[in-house]
Image (tube, rainbow, N blue to C red):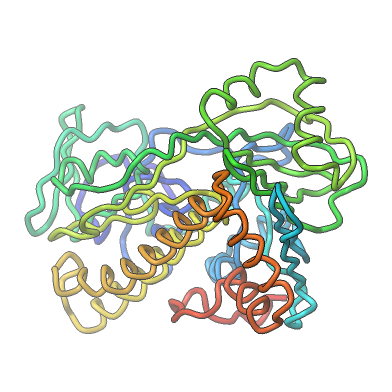
Length: 411
């Protein structure tokens, strides 16, 4: 990948170089398209880096295969990825719980916990090797024109044209706003407190999740007996948790986890971010496609956000490959509608499911308390139900894009 000296015509221009945007750019380049990648600041590719990223993703097998086929997985393994073999989910009240084990379905693991910065660095390392990708940094989009070709107009007076613009610029997408695409959703009135902690008894290659009235606490295993925690709670409690002295926070976190892995000690800084449900009313306009958080934002309780975004990237890559082979314009609505049909229904289904789980488990209603305990107990004791959940965790059960299909070195 090279820095663009002049702004010229491209097949595709991707705005946003995070996990999803970088995946779109890399998939397009591997497919022979000329790509512009716009990101304000290039991420660091150097490793090792001090400490641990407070933002992590729980990657499914489908996402793993996709990242392998993009060439990024080997870089991630050289940096830091943590497989988890088991998952335990339980409720604050009662005895309802469910345990998942990769061995039940003949798999080596249920997925991998990976720091977001590791995924981004690995993708950009592969982008560096692609001569068909040009990086444009430090540019601010002023306007866009969705003609044929589409154009981005920048604050510095320059512009860029491409057959297709891809908005991978996050939940507050500037491109989505400029294209006049509305959205629906709501704030959850929750914040997620995130941190890295060291577990006295190790992590046992297990992801733990405890549901409490204000939101779930997730312990996601990292290497060397650590966890990345995601503690969803009310804004007031989140603020309190951030301000607590270190020892008091550790004691409160250990109690909240019921001491399942012994005492938990902070290993780095704490942070928090607000949680929101959000979905774009449309994924496409002539010459424009939304991917990742620009199209959909879900609750992090099952860690599915980045997996959905990577599937967006994979389906879009398939659609563009087919369009190029048939001579169709990459930004044509006939092409882009195929992408929207391929992803919108699945994203909505997962979004509604996570929203339902959030409301079922994050409350103190006695009737729902009985229902969720019965449900957890039933699922735990019926192998077919439990195995179904395990396969969902692997990213199976849906039609996968080409990049997410079996890779010979997957295991």
